[in-house]
Length: 494
Image 1 (cartoon, rainbow, N blue to C red):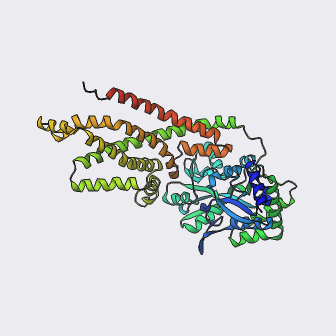
Image 2: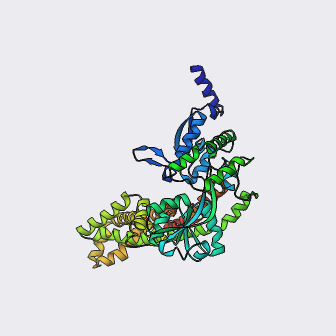
Image 3: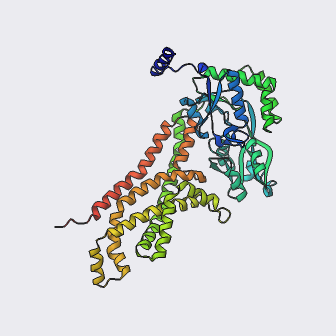
């Protein structure tokens, strides 16, 4: 036993992991936030997952003679995690696309879905196709076939594609009137119809796609074995039984299974097999959108910082000069904003307050970041105000200056000079924290980079470009702040 363990250790140190076929555990990756019918927490035992993808993974593991073990991976990162080897198989409603097949090893399709348009009941006779939605906003998930369809339709039909990170808020925003339609898989559309009243899904398919199982690009042997298992489960009805159990079986599946079983190839491609552009060509195509996203990031950051500075000065002044009640209220505000995550605050402002006020995504992002950073700015300004020597304040009162004159002419200017350096640091931090607003459908620089990386299958080029753009925005600010500090530096005493 010790000899075998020592041998395995030598293999690992040499960079040669044992064959996957020898591993008794089958690690399969997915995103538990996918929800039913893909996967969700078991109501009877929240520590376990249930769903048709869970059962497909268990079916494959059983046929391989291995024990399934779930690995949580964010949906947008499944391809990269497969390439890294974080899991053996990936299942989570993963769509079959030429881009994905160029990055990872993908199985034969095991489920066919239709991209369908969901609108409000009142609009079902007006909006039957993308052409009917000219000049309107259509929501979908980023990095999906539906998103690519909408990007192509932006120029053709003049629509606006709105990208979300989950499939719940597109439909809730549709009900609230923030978007005019949602384009997603019929599986997700059916689920939304059960959750929300007042929606209607058009029967005509905008596009057709398939779900596949993915493995690491080098793990072709396992992928081929998965193909055999899926074909066998199609023949004997086990796959049908799984989808019947989850109310996901429909008339599209028999035709798909017939094509898969009849095909001589392991791949059923519904998309043209044209050569993909090189990464250099894709980078050139994405550069304009990255610059546009960088401008959105900069504009949002500047406006949010202006709001934060204005509110911060007001709060700091109130805490220094206000009465007990004013101080208590402003202190409570500061502790609340500093003690809760900015992401939570963004969700509350955009989604939580939607029943009372329906803020546009950019306005909600601006308000959320501004209110959050105002709390931090106020502490900077308060400490700067209190750092002004008391002797100067007493001298100004003796000279007959009013409280407002002292603040405006003596205390304020000195406090601003003291606060300049930390205020600059906060602005750089705000510039980076602006990436959080992508949860409100604002496509800023980091979100656009994530979409770019998902399409080319690598974070190297997008990551370098994104970092360069952030540095191009933040370094001049730091240089300007240092210049101002040197210019306004208090003269040293003789």
